[in-house]
Length: 326
Length: 301
Image (cartoon, rainbow over all chains, first blue to last red; front, side, top):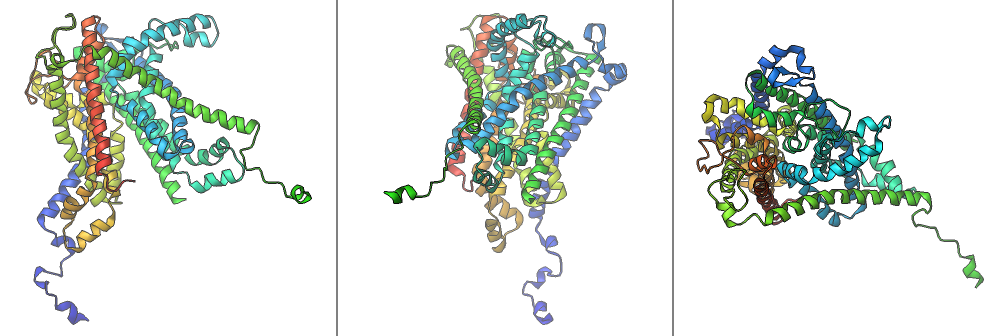
């Protein structure tokens, strides 16, 4: 046996060396190049964190914990960003509350109701929502949608005037541009991604579970409640979180329709501000601590969206893995 | 006759009647309704843009050399500089992000495999798609524009910002396509003695090309509509700037953004015209992507 291995015709190439060492230079260069491009993602993410933090140090040192107060007044050199954080949270929550039922509804329609051939045009239409650029949503929002909403806001406000809970929520509309208008536009914009992710999750439900439910005499809705929902719950939560991340970071549409007024108020129909919008609107004219403050707002926004996205992707991935394993 | 009546009763296989059936039907109608709820705003937006933009756009509107001041009425000048800027910046961004993204996908799928590093890179690429576009703009502003003072604003800086935005999208879509290439192709080429690099470039990539191109086109369509990364990288000017590597320039989304908040009718009209142009570009890219998928997708799901 050993004699056979000794007589290797290609022995001069050095058959005793490991295969990996014999690989030609071009091959190894290509691998290194590919690895470099893969690592580029990590490098960019780290660089974003470092450079934007560096630019915002003077804000953190000048204001300290006052960055979390509610007084953003560049002319008086006061830069508390609480109103923007509040606005980001409130508009994102409105967007999620509006978009999630619709998105999950469409996802169920696509997977459980219509046959695959008819589902494709529906997918195209929903994807079209994502093709309309953010700035076009904003243009339409401020010039067409907001003036139209203003009438609705005024009539709702006069209807709920003085009511205990509804009054503070839906009163005092100033113009069509408000937290709620921004929330509605953001809802349109995040619907495609929440829909497509929910659909992917729901599509992994085993056919045997669904058929089992039908065989027990369940109606379609009972089948969805009993077989589809328990299986896809976790993944849909991940999809919703991802939509939340998108809604918080969406800039230009919000900058145009939110009303540009740093205020913390319970009135959803009142003009407000959120983090991306204030950066987009004020960064160009800002200087000194003001500019650092806007940079710092971007750092906060970056940190929040990264946390939300890591959570969301983690949930989606863990859910997918568990379902595959089961 | 009596035999007929003695026949056993057939099982009722129809949907159960009564409240359960009604409830199921209500829920199904709600699902259909949720689709309708989505169509209405989409139709409303597209109709408005077409109705208000169609009368504005035209050859002279697209090719005019300078963008008139906001106070000027419609009919004077056009948006030529913005179209030139958008095409140049998006092309440059694609030239950077598409090759790098495809190589990154090759790393994840061909070299990294199930290793820890490849999983981390894939996960972070997913996370990076969620980074707000305004943060990308400020990132390029602080790392590039600031170092060159007033000369920092350029099409190149804008292309860097858009490229950062496109990179994770290209990586993820290309990786999905590489995953669909059957292993038998790879094994066949290895058996012929090809190195890994050669197998990847001459066998795997051509097999996945259709899907990769269509994914890249969708990423380009998305980048073309982005405003926030350009705000603080290309500045926005009124005059034509052919040089993408030097000097401030402008782009369609930026023009729409500044015109949307302008009180003048002429500026508003030009905004609608630019919006129609931008949507048309995005739609053409998306339709091309669909055609490429239909024509070249060899290993569809």
